[in-house]
Amino acid sequence: MQISKFHGVVPAMATPFTRDHRLDEARVGELIDGYIRAGVHGISVAGSQGEFFALDTDEHIRLLELSMQAIDGRVPLYAGTGGATTRKSIELTKAAEALGVDLALVITPYFAQPSQDELVEHYTAVARATRLPVMLYNNPPRTSVNVLPATLARCMRAAENIVGMKDSSGDLTQSVEYLLTAPRPALLFSGRDTVALAMMFHGGQGTISPAANVFPELMVRMYDALRAGNHDEAVRISNVFAPLRAAWAWGSFPVVIKEAMALAGRDAGPARPPIAGLSEKVRADLAAVVERIGAAA
Image 1 (tube, rainbow, N blue to C red):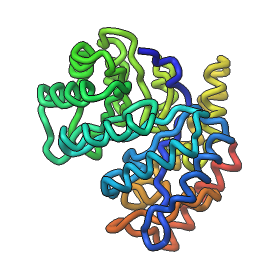
Image 2: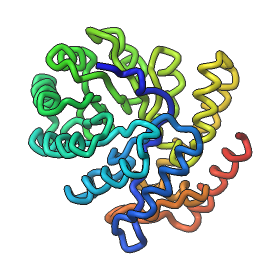
Image 3: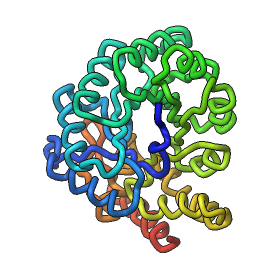
């Protein structure tokens, strides 16, 4: 399966909502156009930063449809199609395939905390239900489920269209082991901005980046510097992003990135309840972080 088109900086796009928490359909296209103008190499929608867990099925599929229309073949679309059950994941993945997305990004089932054997059965069933490339999505801080490197290898042996991993664990050792234990060349994307550069140094193809929602041009510059062998500049830019990740602790996920987007002129509206907006004091602190990152760019 051809996987070379999957690389680079891919914003983990926040799903835009209106002030009364409806899907902001017009804003989907506006955000995507802005990211593509910034030079990103793909768009990821309906992931954790995209509040997939807050979307009903019709909204989820509509978001994918709107995103496909807006992208219009310019870059690949990475479609979040994971669910709490295998049945739900298959339903969303089949819908995504019918729309023509480029890759299914499938988070581990959450809440139930499946075993490694159950994860293999889950991912194999999803992959066999589609012709799309399927990339596993490991995010144990959010799901309490960790995919071991040996489990990715088992999944790849069981289904040829399982192509790799987006890893948001923050465990660089494990990330590298995904590549070392895979039975064939595998995709590896970072989901955590503070280790994205390190993962790419070790062979990862790119980053599905929350921070690229706010500063896409700067993340692209980091990637370009790495590719050009300008490692000092790549490290400098990577370090610039660290305060934004640290600020995640100032509010409930994913409101900090959404509020940072608004401060940077890329407003995606509020997070859906029960997640509340930041207080004025915290918003002012976040504004200072956004301003410092912009100035350091």
